[in-house]
Length: 85
Image 1 (cartoon, rainbow, N blue to C red):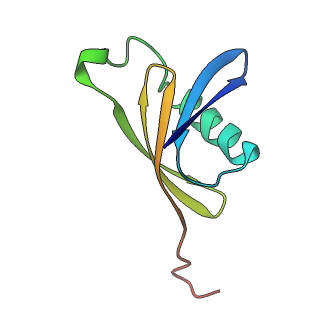
Image 2: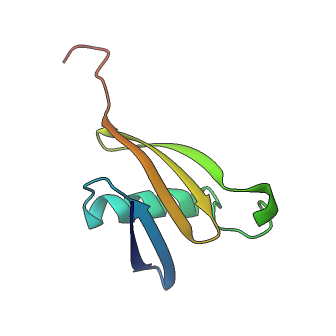
């Protein structure tokens, strides 16, 4: 896995992944995680380990974990359309 530093909303994040993800996707993911308060220090203590999140953004399902300002992206897969359209 590679680490990519990115500045978003005046915060510095380390994105850790081996997935081929666009900056647009990463920014949407970070916005979603910010909205979920994933980066608030009072949410969890580093001793507790990373917090896992499942995100559904646009047409993709992601599985990520967050520890401080590091976001490890473990899974990126196309969502399955259950309606068949």
